[in-house]
Amino acid sequence: MADLTNIRALTFDVFGTVVDWRTSIAREAEAMLAPKGVSLDWGAFADHWRQQYQPAMAEVREGRREYVVMDVLHREMLDGTLEAFGVAGLDEPEMHRLAMAWRRLDPWPDAVEGMQRLKARFAAVALSNGNVALVLAMAKRAGIPWDAILGSELVRTYKPDAGIYDSAPRFLDLAPSQVMMVACHPWDLDAAKGRGLRTAYVHRPLEWGAGTERPLPEAGVYDVSVGNFVELADVMGA
Image (tube, rainbow, N blue to C red; front, side):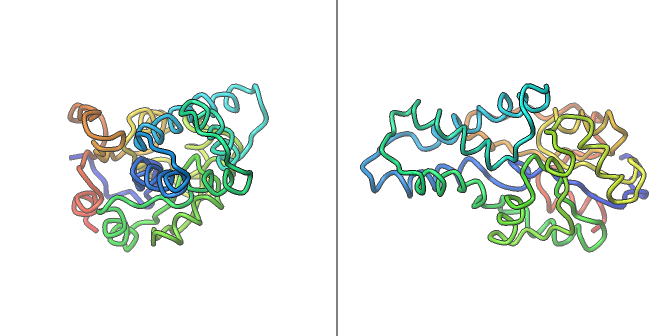
């Protein structure tokens, strides 16, 4: 076990790590579209929407467009998803409400309990590609107990750009080694590790639904590897 005694803050990835975006978006899409006579694979609809996420952010990271907040990207990505599934006839207020479904995501069952324990000992900080208003609205609805919301909007780029990981210890007035990145995505943790942050992998095998489970990372790749936030609290002594 790595020496964790110097950790002062935990910075969390949000989408997939703290919240179950797939189940939540499938639910929200069905609630809006099924009464209009639309019948489709709601999980596949959520997947398609999410699959546009990295390409959309790459346009910003690589300088092909100016920074826009994630709410804007979600609204733009919705157009292609509706077209792909042959859904038409929504007016703009309906499109906006559906795009804002990303503010209404449910936490994983262990997330709030584990975070309540963790924040009693550490600063619990969102380090997300989501804009501040999005992450705040999600937290207020779901009871996610952030101490602070950092991330993309404050540095006007998207993970895994180094600027996001560098910004967390700077804003928190800590050394990078005093900050631990918590995520279920190895690419996120690898980027954080490359900027000197400590790392905690949380396994979320159902992020993309049954049958899509990622393998566990090899032992020792990250400082901590756990199955959920309650286990993370145990490991961190919270």
